[in-house]
Image (cartoon, rainbow, N blue to C red; front, side, top):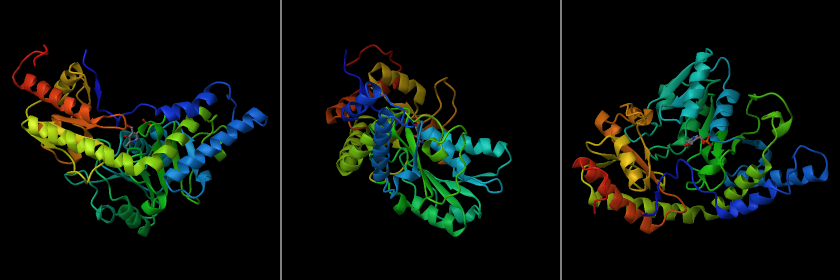
Length: 386
Ligand SMILES: Cc1ncc(COP(=O)(O)O)c(C=O)c1O
């Protein structure tokens, strides 16, 4: 049985063994509730606050108290959109945000708030003048992600934030796909709020964080306790927070090395696939102008869903840019917003490398991709051809 090759690190990745070790005691003998007054609780509290400081350091946040732990990126985005938008103001998102931002904006729109979308270029980039052209005004909330999760574009968040601030709006960025492989600094980005998710950078699933600039008018979504200074009631999962803290500490120290390594692997995969397979097109920006770990490729004449299943049989785990699970021809909102021709959008797959990907995995993946594509194009079955 050939080894499986995991190229879906943007979806999630393994917990770093060092993170797992850091979490272990907090899952067993050190099980305290960080809100309790006794010693066990106080120890948990200290661990929680140390983790908060580590996550704050990853994003250059001066005061860790401005950061609240959440159940992940989805909740952080939800809290940001609901908590920072105002009744009279519009919610302005890019057209290529993650569903957790877009659907939150749509939910707010169904309650009467205005939702406006900023268009993107064919590389999924928000044009710098988009904020002015959208007529953003005081009381509005603008949400534009830092790294696009499907095609790896790096959005001009600083320029967008400056333009939005000049017009009196608040700015949130979803940095879920950036942390760990791209620099994230709240002061440099100039934003009012920023979302993170631990499982995208070597931490556990089920924990994330929202940083809110001090003084930004944030209204909590949940009621029911003084946890996280009343901004996110509920017992904080100490072990998960400790895991996120350790993952953040490692990501900060290792960022240059990781970004370099991932981009080399990405470039190698692109080169290998292009040299072995005809009719391949890259969606999103050419490297190095894209997220270090991300490739999104269209395979001429092949439905993404069919290739995805065929690759799985070949032992390569990737993901589709098109909503193809049910064989539908729906195209992802990201590829549609980029204006890709339908055929190209329907044949798009995402390959994302991570810290555990090895160069030899890339070469083997390219061989298997070639075999899968050739098998489909030649109408062969999945029997093991050489
Ligand atoms: C850009 C982006 N934002 C938000 C999320 C949601 O994060 P989580 O899985 O922690 O809810 C994801 C996850 O895929 C993402 O890629």
